[in-house]
Length: 158
Image (cartoon, rainbow, N blue to C red):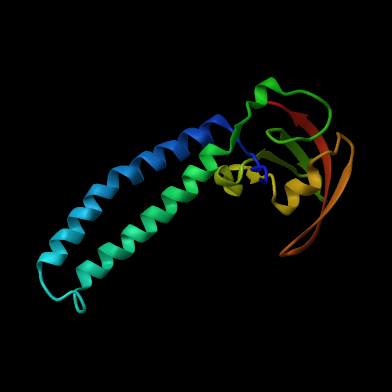
């Protein structure tokens, strides 16, 4: 049997996923009620409420399955327990761009990524280029807008 690949994430990402899962499970009975109510209106072939409720039921069940899968494979990582001089998952990295402007990113799980908040997924092109690098290393990464060059200025585990 194939081994299940772990899904690394921070504790807050795990908590958010389990909260989302709880909310979706709580939505199930409401969807069933909506289906029953729509079914009571008669002809199902032209019943928009029935079709909308059935579609929502399919979406919710798919999301529940996906989140349950991630939660079951979660590998919760606390960056404050990590150390070292190489960039790894959970590290907060300060980079200098070509104009020596500092940019700070934390490498997080897929579900926690938010570039606007300085959190990038460990499997994004930039994070993949950063992992394993040390302070003073230069990296080149291809992004949709072209080639970007950065210098690793600082690595923190916070």
